[in-house]
Image 1 (cartoon, rainbow, N blue to C red):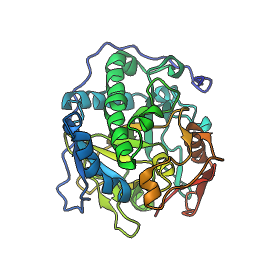
Image 2 (image 1 turned 90 degrees about the horizontal axis):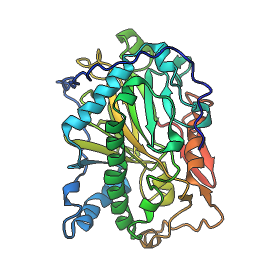
Image 3 (image 1 turned 180 degrees about the vertical axis):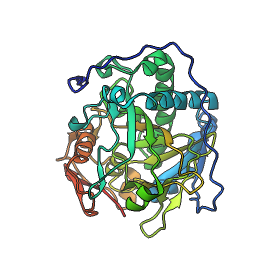
Image 4 (image 1 turned 90 degrees about the vertical axis):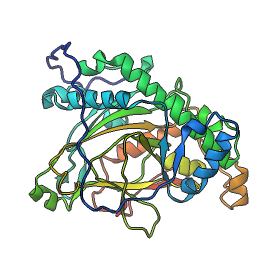
Length: 371
C-alpha cells in the first residue's frame, strides 16, 4: 500500500529533546454507575499445560453472546502503558495547525495519521468531539511523516505496537480458533504482522464540552456501533463514558477498564468469518459522569484488522456446522481489507440519524449505527 502524503500541509515543526512528562490518570468517578459484568481471562495461563483449552472454554460463551471480555496478565507493565498515554498527551497538546499537518488519507478509508476533530456528523448539524492519531505497522510501506514526539519514541512505540499484535492478538486468535475447532494458526495466518493490513495503535482524545453543549448533543460522544476490524483492545480508562450493550434487549452498561486490565471486543470481520456465531460487540461513548465531565478523555487502543491474506468468507468450522451456522460461500472470496476500508469510507457519506443504514459487500452486511 502506498502511503499518501499529498494532503499534508507543510508547517514548521519544532524539534524537541525535552523529557516525556509523566502521565497521571484522572481519578475514577465516585458516582453510582451501572457496570457491566464481563468474563475475565488470565493470559498467564496460555502457555501452561492445558492452559489454552481452559481459556478457550472460559471465553466461549462471552465470544458467542456478548462480544466483550477482559484480559489480564497480557505482558505490558503499567509504566509501559502510561508512557504511551504520555506520548498521546504531548501530541494532543500541539497547536491544531501542526496536528492537521499529519492528516491521514481518510477519504481512501485509511487511518494512518491524524483524524481531526469534527470529522463526522453524529447528529444533524452537529460534529463529533473526537480526534485521534493512528500509527500503522512498523513496516516500510506504512511509513509517513510523523510528529516529533512520535519520532522521539519510535522504538518504544514499535515495541508496544508489536507486542499488542504478536503477543496479545495472536494468542486471542488461537483461542478463538480452538473455540471454532479450526487449526490453531488459521486465524493468526490471516493477521500476520508482516502482511499488508491496516492494524494500528491509536491515541484518541474526546474533548470535554460545556454542559450546554452536552445537552445539545443529547449527551452523546459517539453513536452506538460495532468495530470494523477483527478485534479491538482498549487500555486503562478511568473516565467513565464507554458503554456496552451485551444483548439486543439489554440496557446500556458502563465498561470499567481498571489498571492491569485490557478490554477486548470482537469486531465485524470475526462475525462474518463465523457467519454470526462470534458476536461483534456493540458499544457507544457518552458524556462522562458529572464529576468527570471537565476532563478531556484520553484513550489508548489497538485495532487489529485483517490482512490481504485473509479472504472474506465463512470458515469451515465443525462447531458452526453442528450449531447450524455454517454457510457455503465459495462464490464470495474478496480480500478482507477491502471491507474495512469501505466501512471507513462510509463515514463521510453516512446519515447521522438513519439507524437502519448498512454497509454491504460480498454478501456480508453490517449496521452503521445502533440506538
